Length: 331
Image (cartoon, rainbow, N blue to C red):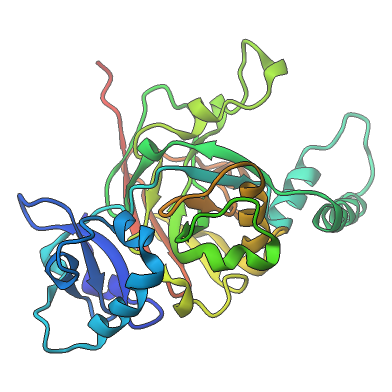
């Protein structure tokens, strides 16, 4: 799918993208809210051939990008002339699970223990207390994804033949701009260059190993098929996002709203998730930190992804992505 001009709207004066002309190589680009494109290769003197290269020099390059965005003498071309790729090729992908309060409460209530006959309202109140305690005393739940699962915001998503229950998970993704290792919560957002949209697809049927249930979750199998992480369409600088803790996430399936929630419902905010991941790993420029998905996944609705489905996902100020599902042809 090709982007429409309207889908270029985002907060702030510019965003970063990875684009390509027909038959041409991918290149880093500056996109303006009126859907015009500036090729950053000549604009930056050919010194940063990729968006990840820009992020590796973010502190020095970001001010130059702001100047370029305001320079109307530079030659720009319409976004509709280009293919939009994932905005960055990350070296590492960190994923946060069970991080939206209402979503986790719904799961708690849905999984009634055998013999628990208490009214739903009582069990929901209990779950709310658990969430309050978790936010105050516990740590975010973070695991690792594969960069090879990342694809563009308008690319088709191939549903593997083996995936019995493919599901959607719209998420806010923080993009690292400065290396971060053992940073405090207070320092964490200083290491975030910007934000983008991620749809962290999951095959629910393979989350747990049937042959070895005692070993727990199998995130490799359930989340990391090629194209299972549509990303973008662009990276909006953190300076243009007033409050990552107050953004609206909306996902529609074939035009019907399935997820519609604010990041205010997060149990652990962006800073806490980034800080927590950095306590173990060294976060690198271009890395993604996905921050969890709100209520409204396919399992909640009893409606999972199938051939021909179209997902429209948006987050306040970050643009929108549209992906179509295509079932893998069995060989």
